Length: 459
Image (cartoon, rainbow, N blue to C red; front, side):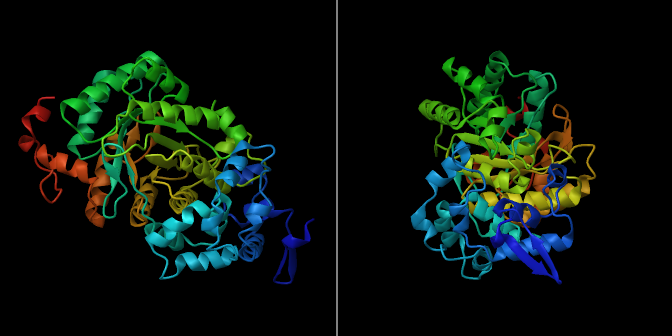
């Protein structure tokens, strides 16, 4: 047992195996960590781990990688990309000092942006474990991360949505109806993104062409994406498909990424292929990544590391590729990893905080599976909390019920609620289009269908 990792509380001494064990025991309660056998055995042990973690220097995470770079390419990437010059600002901080720094009145968006490249994901995960929910919201709300392709996402006072028109048979009419429905509710400025029921090049090309025709016909300042496997998207690009944004699910370890059929070189190749198409008009952020706590554990590739820390490491992977969009599909994997509404809420706030602090344009799929101990009230709560925290984008699913993926998310109406209650607007270019098409008025209030632009009404 490492003597550095001993802490006494209430007359009882708690011993921890190593830094990874401290991190796991300091984590908020998650069913996934319990399933892995690494969670704190009691609230007292969790507090002892958090007190010990607060006194650990940030530089320890450089000196003692949780997963050796000799066996994991993600660890090598994180250490190679670490900006030592930016880190100098906080190199003498403990995790507790860093928490206090982040919560100080003098820490603003500009200062947070200068820190991002000097932070390892493990440092960000560590400080999040010392924070209450309101702390996570406060710090994240001060982080402004902007990305661009055909519009500008992440500006202060703005809130974007991914229009998610999935269909269980990839039926063109069903998908088209959902897209039109979403546009009528001012949804789709982050991306119009379809999860295909079948992953093959022919269907991918058909879906991409239909969305591209719609975007070009009505001059919609947005981007499309079909969330097929990245190799399918590469093959489609080789065949001339109109690919705007390349999608891939990613994870925080090399082994977990292998289980997804990817590696870092493949991600780089796909990004370069998308950049070569030069389809953006206001920027060149061409990647879209989805993540979720528990993915490494479900792939039996977690190396004994807690799921929230591994999620933060996935954001370190994403950061390498300058994405347009990143979102945690927070409750999608199921109650085996996040048991109920309380755990889903905590995970969503952690994920958004960690991603934003690392400099990523974070969104969230506020969601749950039907066998979770959660309901739509829990999702309303998390949606609102993340809106206050400055989340860049959310999902827009017809009726909040994805009939293809069979899970519950957030609807077009939910995004309108959040824009109204928080006084947020869509992406600026998309806002101008909505007004030009008479979908909203100058105050971003929906207009009656009878007042819509005749071209769109006839579509």
